[in-house]
Image (spheres, rainbow, N blue to C red):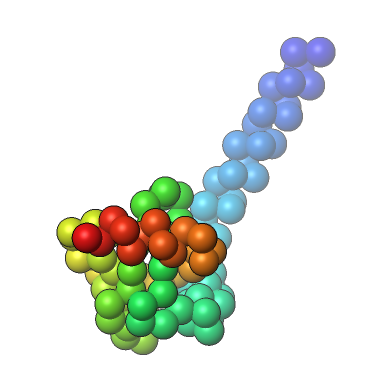
Length: 97
């Protein structure tokens, strides 16, 4: 029984490591940029992946965006952003004031 658990845990760790390696690859970056670029525009409410903070896009480049989180402007790669729903957009704009 313990042997099966250890084997399963090892499999999960390997699967997670492979996913993280893929996320660092140029292929993943290009896929994410093309997905996000279609949805994002200046004024969009966005969230950084693996974060809860929402911000507003102020400037867009080919591969990067300037996003205001509260009172701080941060330059972020498009592959690290996702567009948030309309209901969260009002919350993000309220944080800007």
